[in-house]
Amino acid sequence: MSRRSALRVAGSTALGSAVISLTASCSDPGASDSPAAIDALSTQAELARRDAVNATTAIAANPGLAGALGIVAAERTAHADALDAEIARAAASTTSATTTPPVAAPPTLAQLRADLASVQRDAAQLARTQSGYRAGLLGSISAACAAQQAVLLP
Image (cartoon, rainbow, N blue to C red; front, top):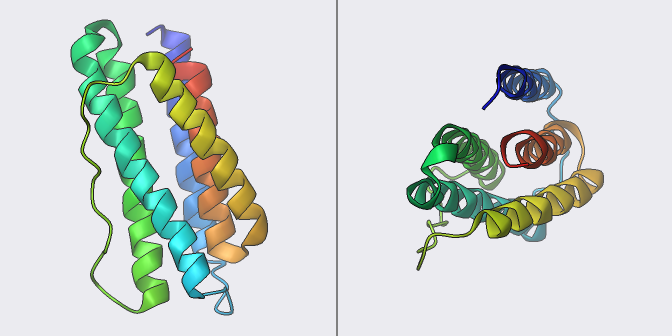
């Protein structure tokens, strides 16, 4: 990974963290806590965990991209953790009903890019239907997935 790419990743990560931090103080107490809204967040959390597992397993097949894939895995794990925290807050529960999906074979880089592109679109669409913290969280996830595709896995 070039120095410029590393700086872009660091900048994207810092920006994403800032967005999450800033929107946390703007949490909308009237945000929809309907089962459908919680299910949508749960789906995003499951996809984040899937992407983290896929990125980790892809390291074996792509050792030259180990650093980039490690960053993708770490960021997607952080996304899953943030979504789980919001789900727990919304559901007023401390347990998570989501699990890490099993991975049969290491994914190709093309498949990982396609998965990230799909999550980027889905998170952006879901962000438009939310408000406050949730909208910011989903927007940040969408932006991070776009940065991962463009910078880490070009």
